[in-house]
Length: 269
Ligand code: NAP
Image 1 (tube, rainbow, N blue to C red):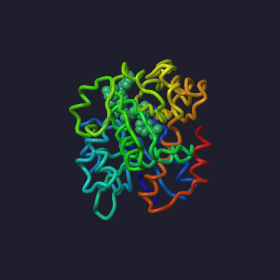
Image 2: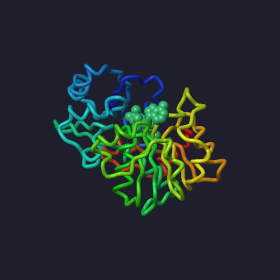
Image 3: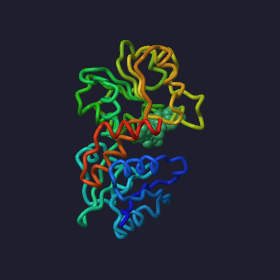
Image 4: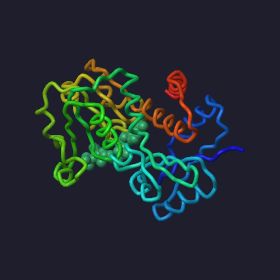
């Protein structure tokens, strides 16, 4: 019988997750169906428990439920515990466990592009859920120095997640010299606001690698600056595929090869 999987979020009109998961099902011979569930905050608990009661194998969770959904799982994986948010829920043997596969997806994106992070200097733009996954991954993999950039630096100072890191506001970015990696973890430049960039061309120029977590459009203005300044640059599509692949590996106890991941990625780009 077809197994049920799905995505829980508030507004899912533009989600390409069903397409990605269908490609994984096909490649891995999984008899599954991946449904988009738009739920209101008041119904989130019932939605998680309802999926469990209906025998769903797993669910993803997206904006704005990555933090509140943690309340409705029995256990957290180590990376989800450290990051403080989940994007994947696995229902098994009467136990519901939350994971953060954005963390692994980000790592897969860096590995794919052979970006070395050990002892490098990184700047993360934004302080939301994706920024926290990126931050944790970089810390776990031995980054040398991290600066987090926010529109409201004072608010960040009061946030325990960021207490060990250098914080900046956008107007201070010109002070940075000889940096290595810059990661856009804000929605600035995302469809439909495709003419926006979180930072100017001059600032992009101070880096050797630019990563944009946005995948629509495939080249944001931020990445256009990076390409024109001869940086190594990449968008967030491989990360998106990577986080979906990791979720399927967790739900089905399988390992998906890099060859298959690349095949799926190439069909989407
Ligand atoms: P989020 O929780 O809403 O956080 C976004 C952060 O960006 C905010 O905390 C804010 O930080 C900053 N921000 C918001 N609007 C901004 C604006 N107009 N200009 C500049 N900064 C702004 O969202 P998220 O889940 O972290 O997602 C962020 C981006 O990453 C989105 O584009 C999302 O699609 C992408 N993403 C991609 C993947 C992937 O697999 N490729 C996975 C997750 C997320 P401050 O208030 O501190 O400035």
